[in-house]
Image (tube, rainbow, N blue to C red; front, side):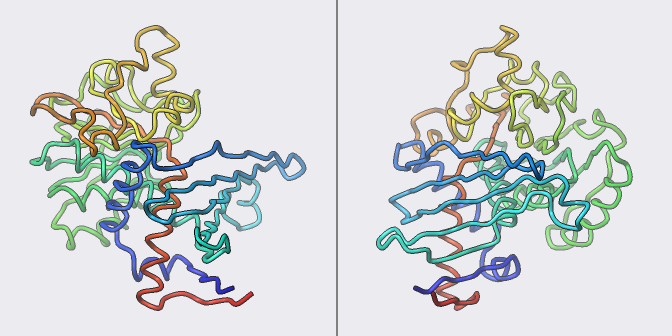
Length: 331
């Protein structure tokens, strides 16, 4: 049995953000037409080490994508000089049941999560969008920024984080990486109000438990991506925005059960899940309507799904074989 080992550098050589955006579109389309088997993730507590180990399996027959992503959350790893959220993707040959690839699950998560916002932005935002506001400068922020740059001709990016030091450092690094390539100016916003002023696209990727900007200040015609809230008590997005925007999700099952962005206003009785227009995959399938005019505000909420992992991982694996990239281990 040959197993292809794919590290972050290997993946970067062969797989672009545009590739990832297309993979995510395909994954969500498959999911929304009931073409994927996505069991609930298994969460195992490891109290002795104050950690958790999560197993996210999935199968999408149309793309031959079968596998499981193993993600662990070990906060004390930081004290050991290790990542606190290590992840590995185990890809399985759907015809033989044998493991065919092991790949860096941390980078996979980053690129597929950035890509899903890119997919939503491509499908739902105004084509003439020029100003992009990014909230959060953590590990997911770079791919969120890159994804939007891949689908819209952005001229100005305003970055905001509660830490001025992190903001300035991120702006410096991203300017060096993307300003010339995409002909874009990247600056640090002075405040959350400054960040969203005149913003056509807003992406929020934080760990906040309360809204990070005033939803009433969002301009007409803007598109918002909510990425960070993945538990019922995490709420990045202002309730005013949720109640007035056209809301779309990656998966109804995931968002309705996991994200405080919608759960909090629902529990308060000011919003209901049946107001959600639909899944992004349903827009792709033309089962529900996307943006209908230039003035409406659209909001896309994602909590992630293993269908994104397995489909993206399969595409990476196929490109690795095609380009003879990665280390082959024989078992």
